[in-house]
Image 1 (cartoon, one colour):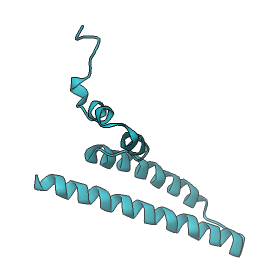
Image 2 (image 1 turned 180 degrees about the horizontal axis):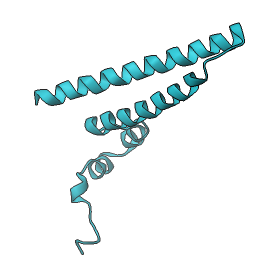
Image 3 (image 1 turned 120 degrees about the vertical axis):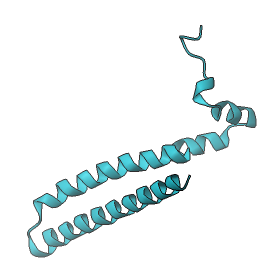
Image 4 (image 1 turned 45 degrees about the vertical axis):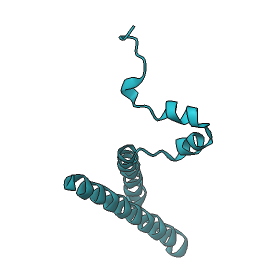
Length: 99
């Protein structure tokens, strides 16, 4: 179980690192463009890749924690019976093979 805590902390640290790198690259490029009429062409592509990886890693963290920002809002508005149906394990869902 200690490995899951370590993995979770490592993924969260990687998310923060990618976000900080992305903000620095984009902000630096904006300053260079408007302040010095130049820019770093690699900054756009690297920040795009950082954003893509940030999204993938954050999705992994969200699945591990069982959260989803958009769905949490919907689930909280359901009645108690609806929440119980929503929170049942996916293995309990009916399948075509089970018929």
